Image (tube, rainbow, N blue to C red):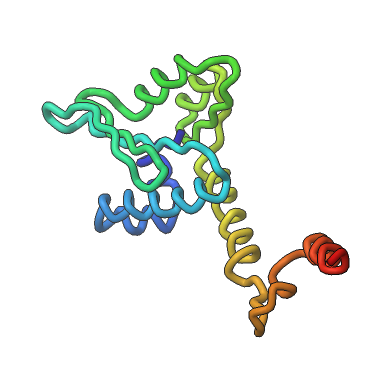
Length: 165
């Protein structure tokens, strides 16, 4: 669970974007978290304050595989996260990303784990590095032979089948 605006204002690149467009900063955060979520295979919920919107109702949307929650009028993201974590079951492992100290204390008392915005940024950077090394910088064979694309165990198994004929 991610406190959206808290993360936006804590990450330097997103803060610069938010200085001219909060909507663009939200979009950039969601793109970053979609990559993170896809690699880690976690359920990610991002909560944005909409408590200053007159007559605003709680709204949930999807951005890829990420759940995006906009709080209702007079409800902060902190309050929504506290309410949500109050209902977690003992077998659930919930991590809340926020740098708000009071929020961190509250979620810890509910049984969730907390990470700061800086810690989440470091995890995102590590995932990006892994994605680059595993997928983007991967050596691509010059030929289109099966032997260039499968592992040695598979090659050995295929060779045994060939010899059994």
